[in-house]
Length: 161
Image (cartoon, rainbow, N blue to C red; front, side, top):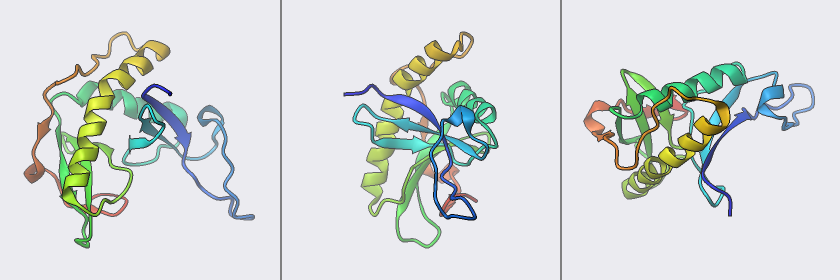
């Protein structure tokens, strides 16, 4: 079984001429890139709330997540149409991470958020070690991430308002 880890991946954008989506390494991507957190079973636990123009700017977003996670606000919110729940983590008005999909039940969204938060310290430690992030403070297990839905905006499908 694999270990929890962050990945930079090209956003899946089909070729406008053929409609075919080709996968390439994030470092070779010519289009948008996003980060995602995979659990030990390779299931996607969370991802960047937006795409970035290249791998370098995506890595900077991951660096912001690492630096701002402790002390951020996390919670679940209903999607704008009222048919489902998403989780997100916000710091100083910026959405740092978001759920991968809309979940039917609030309890499932809470569980997914807790899985993400429980997995982040190990995955950030691995990323930091493999990418030379000596100065970044990695969130310690059980760190203080406020769970407060009242501080979060209503999520519109595909991002925060």
